[in-house]
Length: 269
Image (cartoon, rainbow, N blue to C red):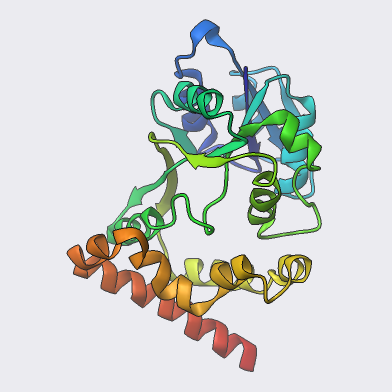
């Protein structure tokens, strides 16, 4: 019924925890399979993965091509895309399957909780909690036939490929959000590394903007200052959470301002 597709590259530190969490899922009849699509790792990622599944493949050059390939090899009616540093909480697969069937949905967002070490991980988790089920989030669990019908991920995108898929999948049926979360292990948080990563992503949005148009209302929310700095944190009563945690809120905005200022300085170089 479900094909869990895990994309990897040099993930020997994370892949075991990820696949353990999948293997522990309880589903009627054990109706799920695991596929690992690796981008030619140089470490022990594939060796570890083969202890869980015989469906371990090599595919590149980027995550979108890996995911498309995994969906083509899959046999499930539904597919779930995971990164190797993600961990499923108990019952996620069964809940997603039941909810999608009950709602006749095209796909589901799965709430994401950031885990790792230190105060800044708490800040990252606080920020991520506001994005669940919004246009900044992206569907992970979906009907395979619809994924293939819309052509899968656009492999010309380096970033925002999940936003692009989200929008096209939404035209095929309703999208909703599950109750149970998955965990995203970001390990040790380093401010400098985080800022450099964000700047790298910001520079790569041109393809997505060109495809949907700079005046598209969804693009305006996803990449606009107003929604990203304020709207997503206060809509639908979320302002109560924001103002209930002043230290986390201040630290979150500190990070976001650092990213913005760093990008401005980068552009002036």
